[in-house]
Image (cartoon, rainbow, N blue to C red; front, side, top):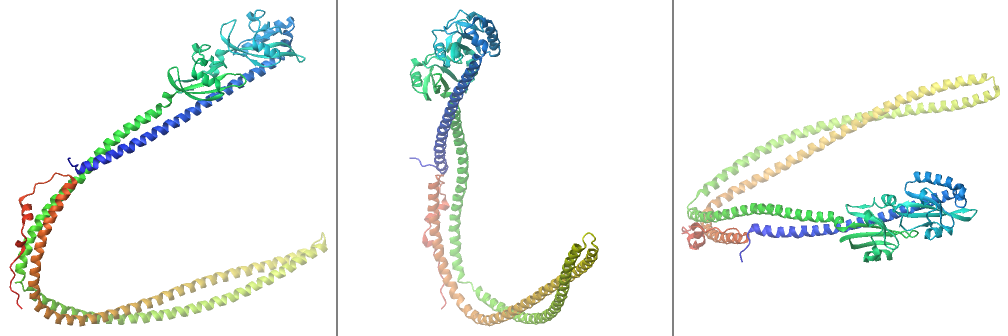
Length: 596
């Protein structure tokens, strides 16, 4: 089986993961949207059923009230039993019919069912309602709504609303309103639209369609002959999924208890779920587009990753060659290392360098001592400034104390004046009471109160001036304290620097002693340098052998990397073959004799 390349190892699993993830997401989105649409449409058609049925019931009740009110008019009551009032009743009924266009005719019958007055003259004395169920109910004193029938005069589909006509609690006739079903359907059934093809219709208690947007279905479509109709007639309201007219539909229905009519609202499920189907198609298209785009992106990313790896492999091969070359150089260097004695001269140079360092350290100690003396002088000057600041602070505090005493005296004066002012105010009140309307003594006392008030104002101003001076002096004292604190901080900093300089002098002295010791050690190092050179030559030879072994391992790692990535394997060139076949003995070199 052919192994996958690095690009394909990235590409295939990622695309598969995207397809699974997007497919699952699209499926969940489709199911959720379908369920949501079904809930929304179910709620919508249920509301349509409920609102339509309520509108019909309200409209029927309104007609009942208006017919009941009309039946109480004297001309209509008299016309039911007395032919003298028929012409007047006909005229009034005709006027009512002009105002209420939804009635095909408005008529009055006597107790035998004969039409005695009507807005349609062709009905008078020609039609008898005695065998009609609504007539019987109203003759017994009840309100009634008939089933849909064909009009005997026009042939249109109509239904009748009837109320009894009473004279002193006795039924003397029946008042009929014959409603044109076309008007009724236009206002209550035709406006019901669910999507593009969904619609509503009205059936009676026997399942016969009495109002339908398709007028050809009125009084012809009979749901009782269908399984769907049986389910609808058995319940008062509900939701049914069924095939109707060869189309899968979601059907809601609700029955009016008093009328026995049932409002049916149907919605095409294909149309309902069209947005969900479009969403599914969009998700599929989006998934394919994302897979293609992601595949291209991953392909180029994988290529961009594979190319650097390929370059790394080439670099590692070059490094293996360089390692082999450097191993030969190291081996040659190990042969000549024993002959070099330049380290002895380097040791002597180090000795001279150590002496120069000692001289520089001594000079630095002298400079540090001078700097320490200067810092001590600056510290003394700072201490003197601190003493002066403290003296000024003391004087400022004394002034503040004196000002506080003067302030207390003035405040005491203000208190005395206030006390006297209260006494004078009391006297003024007494004098005013004694004088009555004259009030001469009150004027004198009031003048004294005014004078005392002026003294109190002067004392208050003096107090304010003194308080301002106290505040200023307090601020000056605070500034002096701050300056004193800064001066003493400077003393502490200078002392710290002196300590640091002394520490540096001590450290420099120790380094001088160590430098002298290094001079002694350098002489012994010169003697042992030759022995170390020979040992280093032997170690270099061993290192070159190890480098050869590492070159072989590096080649094996390169082969593993090529196999893992699936990249095209490069042919091993002659230099790489030499690396793999390089004998370990080639790294061994002849060592010069060691002088003991």
